Length: 139
Image 1 (cartoon, rainbow, N blue to C red):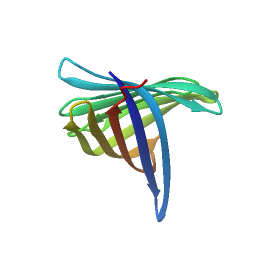
Image 2: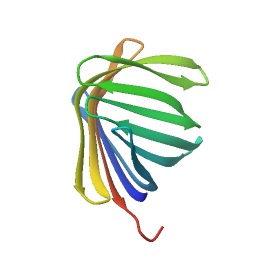
Image 3: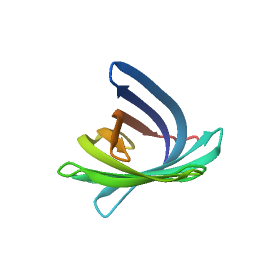
């Protein structure tokens, strides 16, 4: 189904917080016990196609196009991922603190992922990502 996607991520580094928010449209579907949300982000570098997959115990964010990134999440373990840039590929690691998917009504819900992100072994901050989606009938 076509959905409106509202995404807000707060990044905490030491005493500083930065919040990034945007609204876009995408597709939501369920397959084999997992929830999928696909949407495009338009950045200065170009369009980024993003897929978010969440199941009970784990999640995955895949970004392709102008930015290539793979972030994996698991309630039990630290997970490895990667970020490709013109300067090379950087190793990422997530330590998941919260992973949830709540359906508030037919065709709408909230995905929440809170995690610490490390790049090349060094902490780059704590991330609190909240994605709400709602079926868009007029798209």
